[in-house]
Amino acid sequence: MTNDLRNTAERALGRMRELGFDAALVTASAQRRNELNVAHNEPSLLRSGESAKLQFVGLLDGRRAAADISDLGDDSVAESLRGLRASVESAPQDDANAVSSDQRAHVVQGAGDNDLAALTRSIGELLSWREREAPAVMLEEALAAHNELRSHTLTSGGTELSCELRWCDATAFGVARDGAKSSSFNYAGGTCEQLTGAHFVERFGIGEMLRQLESQVHTQPLGASFVGSVVLTPRAAEDLLGWLLGQLSDQALIDASSVYRDRVGEAVAAPLLTLRNRPGAAGVGPFTPDAFAVKPLEVLTRGRLNCLTPSLYGSRKTGIAHVPVSADGWEMAAGATPLDEVIGGVARGALVDRLSMGRPGANGDFSGVIKNSFAIDGGQVGAALSETMISGNVAQMLRDVSAVSAERIDTGGSCLPWLRVEGLHFS
Image 1 (cartoon, rainbow, N blue to C red):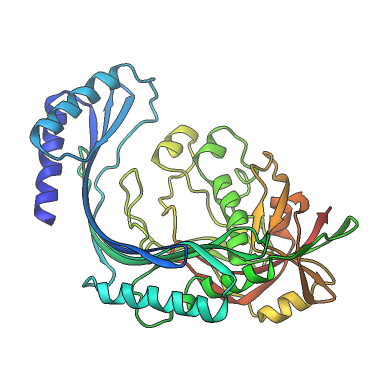
Image 2: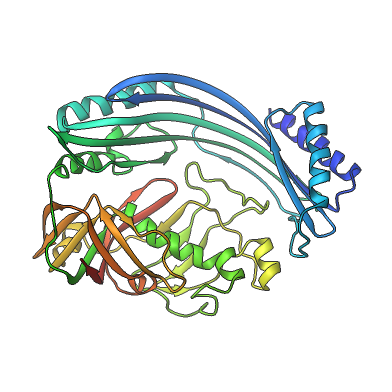
């Protein structure tokens, strides 16, 4: 299979040269997936699937066009490339367009054989646990799956990148009901090398999420407006992380809206925060979309910003040094404070599992609804909250982190602790 993908990519790249592209990138990939699904608390479907894809990027006179196809036959490839050649001529001209050169790597990552019995056991564990521990929860959807991905990327600049990745993933999505009342929906899931070795609900915070759904059927308003603290679960902390990473990457750098563009080397977050990119995490690709091999990278060290992360295009557009990073696989260093003490340090505030803040302003200002959340009063977790608003500034939140938990949840795509943040406005 690996040689077939390489040959397919070579033939396509040769055709792109014949068609007169100045530069080109081709990725041939094949994926196999086996999954067992749950719907409405019952196993619903066991399915296996295989798919193939061929992706093209062609450059001509500073113009760029891209396409992908699932039929890797010669006629389909030829037709797609003729269409790509026509499309590139009408694309906008931009001298920052380029493809990678001289990147070489072969990565083999993840567990070996696909184990259908492990998928069955995992789903059986989930359903038995739900019936016993969280009977009010309806699992609208859940699944356990094993994946195998092989890919081969070539560019006209001499890049050759290939990988063989294997991983498992699992998710649970549900709601709890008591008569006519119900909780908000919530979900948890992630990727790992294999499902054996740990109970399904012990992964990715799934068990705690399902237990909390039962406690969120009956909610209470928070009361009068006040300024207090939030404890963000790892799922909610992803919103802060996503905003920060967006500020360090192409769009914000190119349109000059990033609040961190000129802050490299400075403290931009609380000294409790260290953030790394880990391309070797389960299910996380080792290459960037613009065909660069990714190496582990520490973006924040005790709150100090080490670099910005523009792509090759973003670098050529802005003049900022190019730093290849994986889109996923981010890890925040664990703190030294047990979670009970992180919560215990809140005089008044909320434990927040979902932070719906839309798109913050260019400077980080936001106002949003906290969902699947609980009141905290005097360091004790209380009633589930009906829709409650918080407002603040995301950049300031990163500076106002006052505690980081020793516990973390590793979902493959992220490995994050609980964060206590001060100075949020509740209403």
